[in-house]
Amino acid sequence: MDVRVKETYDEISDEAAELVLEELRKKPDCVLGLTAGSSPMGLYQRLQAAYREGRADFSRVRIFTLSEYIGLEEDNEQSFAYYTRKNFCDGLNLSEKNICMPNGMADDIARECARYGEAIAAAGGIDTMILGIGPNAHIGFNEPGPCFVPETHVVELSDATRAANARFFDAPDDVPHWAVSMGMRDIMFARNILLLASGPGKTEALALAVAGDITPKAPASLLQLHRGAIVIADRIAAKRLPGYECDLP
Ligand code: GLP
Picture 1: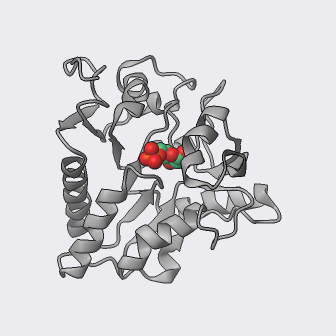
Picture 2: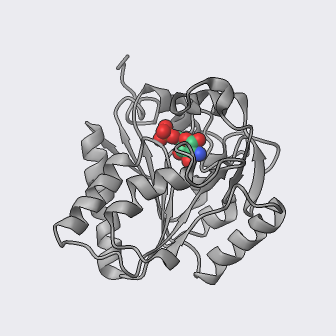
Picture 3: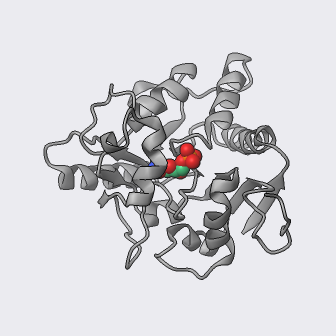
């Protein structure tokens, strides 16, 4: 994997933005896969700034979000749909028809998973996938388990993931137990992958992802088999990676 270690979160975001803007220049109708969470916020702000300043045009870009909680309405502030509209779409000139998200309120959730997978395939797959990483090395909501799940699927969230995401909710018990997630095949078929990680909470997960065995017990480890995966991390998150060991607290 191409590991790039930066001093600050701003530098991580700058580098990621440069890579996404370069992709956009090369392919104005590129397909982006988007994670939610705090890791990509700086990147999304930079993309919005580039649009405001006339340096980027998103009118032909299509987006697919990685995951969604089951049981949260699109306008629920904790839903990933709400997050994505607020922190990404609202500041850009995306066309509404190019905003694709799994519907966590669908009556037939199995059918919704199939529909989402077909929509990704019909778009020709993802060009650039933006990933964060969970403390247990999950990506999207591909949780540690006995096997990698290739397609969009329903996931029962682990206690670790619910605890990590509780900070976005009024109370820990409000975190949904179930979610829909893009599967590992759609992630691995992306032409480019950018995984962003910062802070001490990501150190162990990043070590598992980059330097551990390839195992479904650490889903992000599968990225080691991807040709274009780039990890952009700060020194604390990277401190257990070979060559970047240090005694930062
Ligand atoms: C959630 C999301 C992931 C995200 C992860 C890390 O569980 N489903 O896609 O990467 O959290 O989030 P953060 O960047 O806020 O640490």
